[in-house]
Image (tube, rainbow, N blue to C red):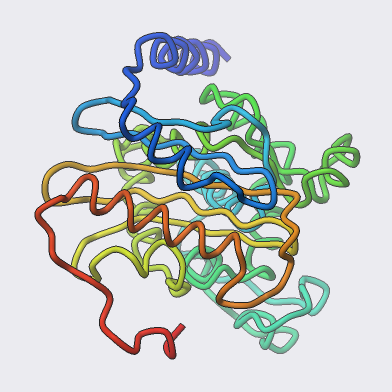
Length: 304
């Protein structure tokens, strides 16, 4: 218990200090304001240069739906159990039809009684955003209650699992599976990158999964494929979101963009929210790597 409070106090003081001492990049702030002008919905953005510490923000502390970004806190919950010796990363699990989340997930195609390693379930949850894997991991982590306590422990006051979590029904109706703020989700990814989430080893394993994302038609499509990027995206009808940490040649940077109340609810490549995510990612790459002349190859649209 003493260790819990020590970690919590340390993280809370660190987050408070960051909020008080962060230097604002006024130029980038204006660029973001111009980029989002006229968007048909609510937008939240947080950007931080991990080299200079400067930030740019728009509604960065407003709560937004996470959609599948909630899978990052869920995976943290599993690794917390592993580090405590309550789960085994190499454990063989038995799939049951009762775990199925209807859709096109890989794990959902398994037959009742089939075996799979926990390590592969974790990989599928992040890499292919497998919803069946996510519900399974949420349960193995001790449900949303345990995951939310872990987020609280690290000073993340608004990042919460809502679905299948006691006393979170009102939040689920408002935000869906999970909720967060742009600042908090970017902070979580930075904690993982810095080896400060759970343990250095757990952080490294999580980060390695986050750099192997299958769905790359939004923010990742505007960053050169030879640059390492950790990310997780999310989408529901009226919301698009993505958190991205770029290991850029001239200094790492992290950003999170989230939307809600979008008028455009189409599941199309030119959805207004998805277009905004791509535009922001492109703008930031060019801002932090101004000498780069990279552009997506002509014809890439057909592969998205």
